[in-house]
Image 1: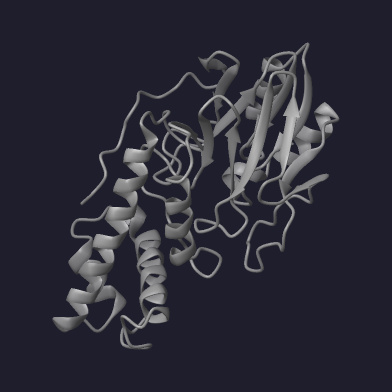
Image 2: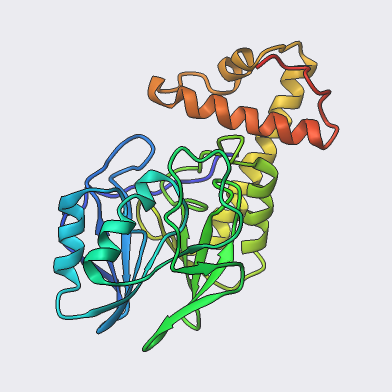
Length: 281
């Protein structure tokens, strides 16, 4: 039921590593149970470069990015979604590089504790940004966040998947901005595309990515079955479900697990599979 996840040793912070020709990875020093070793900042292209996810507002990481692109022109600073570990470094970096910010241009998340930087280049589903030798197609993939975008590197079979799909862990879905129905629909959408290599917002690259996406969908579907069965067996509260479905959970992850369970409950209630209010929050 649970996907097989990847691990990797801690990366060399501050050092850009070429993952495949023309794509470099820099990892921010913001490790945590939610970010693994830290946020991946991706440098796409050579000479004229796009930066995907500048990461947190951290001077050391910003200086590492600036050093990595010294002598090159940065054409775009691209943000996958508004969460602080991906977006808060965007404004200072874009200012230092005199580069435009490209990010979600639809309705902003109403409940975001950290607002998305106002984009100079607003992106909607199907829009693209490009430079010499690369073109990035924006795919709106709400669920983890309502403004989440993945970016397909066209004609390369590569997807920059942000926090929508990661090889090291499942994604948290935190209502009200996070939406489980949207998340699962966005996963299903990726199965209709051809990209087989995912470069994620945290952790290592994912080969044979469709297998992971199918496993993530199956995991969420199985979790819903567990919830329905637990309620039928007498569970009446979110805390009871948490104890039954997440035994031995790391204390640092309890809050996220509770909120993700709440996202499942909202989906099941909307679909008529659970009576509204049946489970006390």
